[in-house]
Image (cartoon, rainbow, N blue to C red; front, side, top):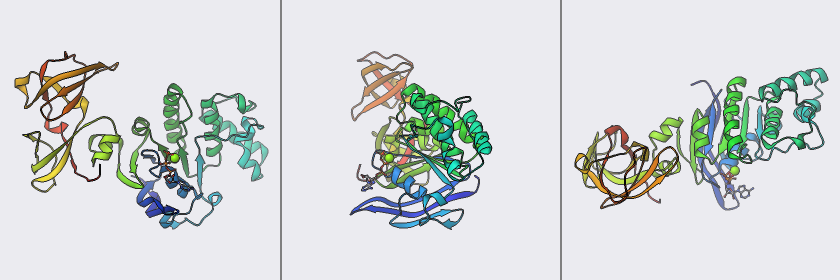
Length: 348
Ligand SMILES: Nc1ncnc2c1ncn2[C@@H]1O[C@H](COP(=O)(O)OP(=O)(O)OP(=O)(O)O)[C@@H](O)[C@H]1O
Ligand SMILES: [Mg+2]
């Protein structure tokens, strides 16, 4: 990966007597699309506001290119922010909204015009210079807000749930656009969302947070396929999470059976948890599998069926394109690579 641009070192933040960040350690690189993902109140916005300079940390450091900046005011940082509520100036047209900062800096009018035009092209709003911003759609207003942030040529763009106010279809379209813009401008994007699908589809790196702490840092596929604990596994998609024992490297026991797996590095006989993704499970005849049960429910989900299979010990969820009738006795088949072993954690 390219050079480190921002380093958060043991960052903490208290509001009154409540600790909302509990020692955040994170490296953010040049050109990286990094997403902070986590449930409401976990500290995503607070982390972003500290990086932007709107908030001072209670402890720890923020380094930018190796230099401590946590006392530096926002306008002296090479960082710009796009918020969920785009806060455009309603009395200014598109051109003047985007050129606002440059105007303040007394940049030459013709230079501003040129830069604004280039930005409008990048966000797909060519020819919109003279439009009244209050008459634009939500998606178009958000594009203007992004153009306004990018025209200052920051090294880092912070985006706090920038698509939160848009409806599902435009949101999907803007996700693709944003990713494209990030590649084109080649700067670092730090993106905040509580939508796991959005995080997985856009990011180079996903940082899963809960309760002021980082739970896991990884690529979307790492986070999805190799969740490090129950919180991450549960937050990222639906899962079957089962308590078990790691007998030894490559051999795990759960639900009374031993299975070959691809995981290693745990203690022998360590208490662990296993993740089985619903889409990794196959329904077979009972005599072809160790785990057996009865189909209790089947729901058509558009592309696949969601099938609930009740065994002696639990209910498994399966996603499959094969139909299975309620009441049928079935076996549950999966391979060594479908078993993901995680450390067991207390408190959940
Ligand atoms: N200025 C403040 N004063 C007091 N408490 C605050 C302040 N800002 C945030 N908090 C608290 O800090 C915690 C983290 O808030 P934060 O806004 O960072 O969460 P978030 O992850 O962005 O959540 P959401 O997804 O709802 O936006 C919350 O419990 C919030 O109530
Ligand atoms: Mg927030």
